[in-house]
Image 1 (cartoon, rainbow, N blue to C red):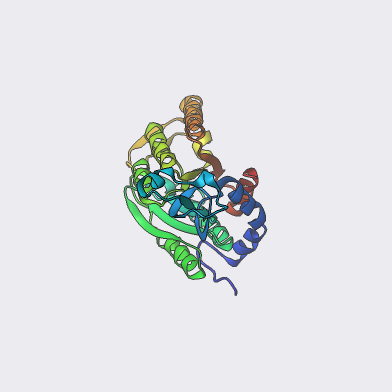
Image 2 (cartoon, rainbow, N blue to C red; image 1 turned 90 degrees about the vertical axis):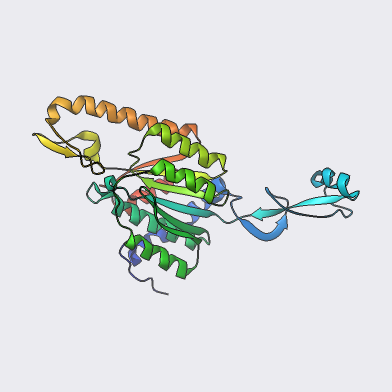
Length: 293
């Protein structure tokens, strides 16, 4: 069936993603196997129910506490977990409107491609958009109708003003089903100490996490050769500077900030990828997936 053209996902994107299924699938199964329940009962990682012991059962799965209560032998059954459940979280705060293309548009393209890839693999993809609150939410699914709703939800997202990224991640940690893969797409202009607490919360709740950090090279290099007025897109505060006077110190502070963010992710066993919006999103995504193999 032909794929309709959406604002952030076109038939050409589907063609580009088609070659990524095997490598992405191998990565998903290698890193995140055991994410989702299958109706087939087996001995896996999440407890499901008891049944009475029959000859030949593995005694390692005997529930001795149940025997003590009922004076009968019971075996613990577990649900095999196979499919991946992912929730893509997009930061829609005002700072995401920076860049050419804007970071928020870049994030929407990435989210659409990732959702398509997950759905194509019969995995589940959901969407959450956050600024100071949750502004859009679509539970995970994999059907064609669900993917259509997700693509249209991406088109409806509007940039916000401020950001409460860490606060919203804390809330998601509690609300999402355990062992969800949380894919965060953000510029991460947030307080690192609060961010690390949010990541720790995600991991404590047994979620996997991948951070896709969107950057514009102008943010790192301050490539202006005359007096400029910088504006904080969230607070609207303005500051006039001579780039030549502050560039060296600015680049040092930015470097220290990025190092801290990367360390935060490493310390919490969170996958981290930085992408520059100047690079075509499809090429950047191919490279990202290749780095995960």
